[in-house]
Structures are given as C-alpha cells and as structure tokens.
Image (cartoon, rainbow, N blue to C red):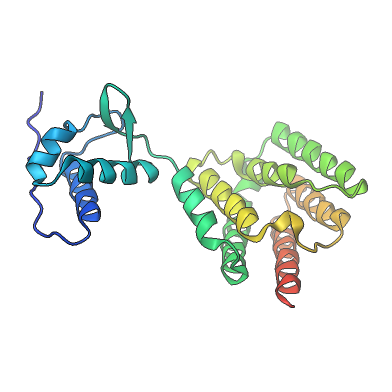
Length: 237
C-alpha cells in the first residue's frame, strides 16, 4: 500500500471550518485520491489539524454539499465521483431573479451551440435525425394545444449534439438549460407563440438533414435571439 503524504496542520484560525475544508482539499490533491478512496477517520483528522471533531464534521458536510466527499454511514468518508449536479444547483440558485445574468447565460449557450453545429452535421446519423423529428413533432402537438414543451426542448438540444459523444458538452448543455429555466422561470415568462418556437426547432432539424451548415447556424442563432427578445420584454416593467 503506498505511503500517503501527511495532512498539514492549520496555520491560521479565522473561519475555521473554511480552513479545514481547504486543508482537506489539499490532502486529497496532494495524495491524488480518486473517487472511492477513503479519508482518515474524523478523530485522526481532528488531532492532526489541531481542531475539534465538530469543525472537521462541519467541513466534511460542506465538501459533501459540493459533491467532493460522501459519508457512508458506519463505514467512513470517501472521495466522491465528480458530478456537475452541485454546480448546476448552485448556478441556478445564484442566477435566481437576475435577468441580466440569465441573458449572459443565454449568450454563452448561443455561441456554444452555433459554433458546434457544423460538427453535428458531419457526424449525425439517420437514427438521430429521426429522433429529433419525433421530438419536434411532439413539440408541434403541444404547441397546437398551447401547452408548454420545456421537457421536449431540453431533450432536443441534448439530441442535437449526442452524436458528438462529448460528455462535457452534454453536461454543459444541461447546466445551461436547467440553470436558465430555474433562474428565469422561463416557462412562466410572457413568451412568443409556442408554434413559432416549434418552427425554430423544426427548421434547425431540416437544415441539418440538408447538411446546410450556414442555414442551421442561422436558425439556431435566430432561435436564441427569440429568447433574448422574450427576456428583454419581461425585463420591462
């Protein structure tokens, strides 16, 4: 079993729980601990850091909320597999009620998707195209009933880039989507016609099917500019 580097004692006392968190993070990084690796017991950590067990416990809870650690009851504390979920939740919370920040987030999504759509056109399969058409048809049916189709909208944007098999991109699309909808409560905004939104998605799919990069990029760009207009409209008292 490899010899682990020692955990460094604390050198400052202010904001003790934050300092303990930093020390635990450094211990994980210095020892290159991976998901599933165990941390030493709380009693050892408290003794080594020169703090009470409550301070260690509070720091561990904070790192759990960030998705860095997990406590397995009766077993111990372990490094957790990385997940975007804590970032997603914190981002959505941080953007809440801020239409300016939401518009900035929309712009990042627009640039990301319009920049990568050409690669989708190169790689997309007939099966993915068929699935995109099915999703847009579901959107149309809901739009004709004047119903929201937020779930289908999210699915559409994931399907659009699924062929690239880029897990980071997939996670970012989800982060942007969920943060945007949570922060802006977009489904309750005074939106344009649902049929117009469906038509945007339909035209994007048909441009991809025709392998027309410029048209696909233009339709995506117009789609996000439509969202921008909705945000601007709802910012006005």
